[in-house]
Image 1: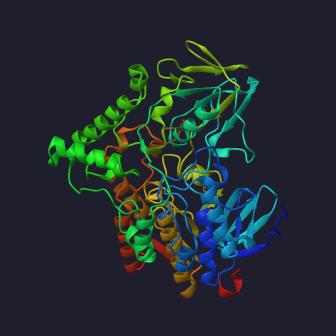
Image 2 (image 1 turned 90 degrees about the vertical axis):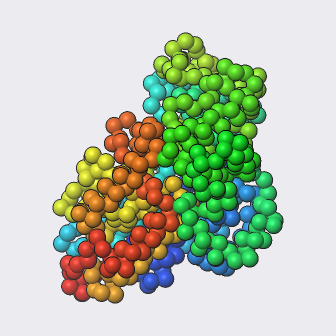
Image 3 (image 1 turned 30 degrees about the horizontal axis):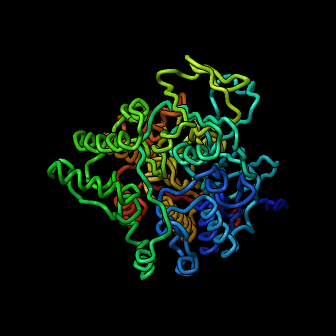
Length: 545
């Protein structure tokens, strides 16, 4: 692969070439600014480039997990499955890049190592691991919330004589597990997707589970022709309507009432309907499952009963029951045959709360009560979510203050779009935005549209410095925290709270009020003259890049 020559300066530097980065390049061209980008991967796709483990699949329906900015793009792409696989989503990203010629200004296989702001010139200087330096007036971090994998943290890995892999950095070449003893550590979304596939291929699969998770059947299959025809009758309006929903997807199974406001028989019937529909309907079928303890307990009991019915061995079923956190307060998982996998004679479940891992040995994994011989270890142990990818960029803002220091007690961001003290730095799906709690294609388009409009607003008025005001950021952070505290989400030790990373501040990372409410709020702020943002002039016009 040839490496693109990096220009010395540009109007906007975009970090990342996943769906956010690609759309940013498209949008910036439309407002007449020069843009350049860096991407650590050899090609486009972001998380869908790296996460290519067997079974990797989107948990948002394909007809909703699409760009809406181009009616022509909507018309010319057809999804084959209700929930698209990683290869199909990657082909979609490649198709978009080809269709709009988006690769031409992106340096691939290049990782950003430092970003420093110069107060005197209101510019950013970006350095890469290839030794390049580039200056820009605006910096857009489109790095994705789930793009920095957690490294394996178990002692002894260097002594393992077999092979080990991470789901978040799976090899491009096929991994042959036939006849092999495979161990999977982690039962979050990636683990729940990969485990049934590996169980079908391996000689024996051992699942090392610390915390059982709630998972519901995806009920994947070909895209329903009748529903697709309904959506495509006015695809643009469909996407517009999605942005006015809490999750950025149509509420197809939703009673709109409390689970406790109906009879037990009606509640059971609605749960069954949602379970049989797929998607995250079970979490949305009643309006208070994540806020009302009794309603939440009813949802949990329903899933527990399903697990006990699917898993034949009562002791194994009991180990798979989530009991330490409220239903839906860790990311709900969608699966294809996950619980039934534990009915196989060649699958073993190890409860790490009862027998923790002590170390990895040359021949496998040693827990407190047994040695488990393995040929391959798969780490499905997740990410340093939302803030980790931003901190990895080595960002230093006004007066040389490092973002890592500014966020030492937890991240603060105004709307998830800008950070006080870091002028002209924009974040896509940053902390305190809806981020991963909503359909990411919807949140990406909304954020990038806002960023482009904000920059155009400054350009047309001769401003060269844009920053979030500290008081507005503090007020927003308090609102985000207060909203989260009214739910059951803060009762779970989850990556939503940063609890999966040792030493990470415990702060609920997302705006939980819903995409619809967030969009309305941001639009009101713009109508109010970009309330909470400060625009200023630093340089004379001839000094502009």
